[in-house]
Image (cartoon, rainbow, N blue to C red; front, side):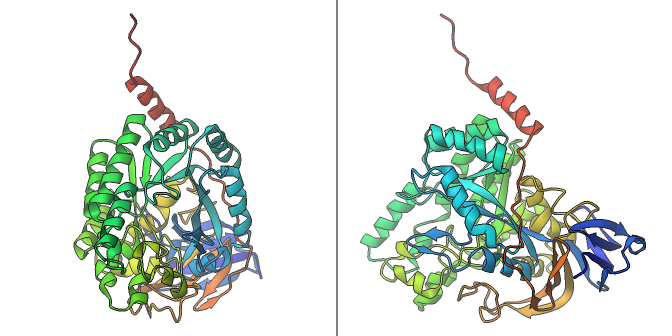
Length: 483
């Protein structure tokens, strides 16, 4: 295959504007964007007609879990099948999670995940979870930032007796992240409250999937989000809150941002369109397939999430792609707390958000690009290599047909999972072609993903904004009183 690709006649959409232009890709990068791009094309360049379509930067899913060992089992999708499914849906980059066991050295876990990810079909990066604390964790965080290009760290405020962080770990890790120029991220649910409510519900005889949302009400998420923001504010460090699912947490983020705090929020495609009625299905397999945390909420919360995206108080969309099959979910047949948490969506995210966002007028095409690609690239230090159609950027592109449609189903998905949370939903606005590193990897239903073609993305530490915040934190710190 030629190393050059010329995309002609499309409308380029970036987060700031849309315009008619040809796009030339050479050697895995965008070489030219504009009406005269064809003049620079090599004679053997493959040409692709994008008439009537948009040319978008490849999607970035900043929250996936491929090949994750969790709750006694391992997700169905590994780094090849999961990233291949993403390519079919227009997502060309994922940021996955290294999650060490309690007391496991960070570098040991990181090296394990790097080994698993060598089979990835698309580019990928990692957040690393901080699940415990001692001086070795402090040291390894420095190694990860300075040598391995990890510039974000995850903190689970849920999952008591497993990977949950207490406040001491939050404080020490947040402060270390600030020193290093790294972004702390949190899964905001009060793990103590969740554990307590799970026990209360079990004692009351509630053991089916309907107990899952009852054990994780919105207040549990809002409390943890507010606590994490308070810690971050005192220390002067920016904060990214993953999978914001409820009005209470979204409004808390909006208040903090209005007060000048650097807080960023992520929304899952599923939380935007799926509601909590799924847990009341009489079919255990159907209800259990939707068990993830935070759970799906009442429909009233969905509008708050959309408003957050529209206002800019919530910046990114993701999937938390974490696939378990029916047999794995059956581990919680007699106890909802033992159902492995996770759902899919890496292939469907962009089409679902376009259909429910752009087609309804909630988002413009440029705002769609912002929340599916550009904002994640900026927040996690991949921009302008990723997240924009511009000369010098990676040639990760999606040809998007705003009039094309398809019906989403487990029968046609590329994920190994046996369930689709968007089952039966017909979406208008779909990818026709996906280009990764300048190579055509998906073309009108033909998935050409190659195992191992993906590259690990080193993400540099942040600079001046962290330094300024660090000085602010030092100024606000209490000083010793001389006696």
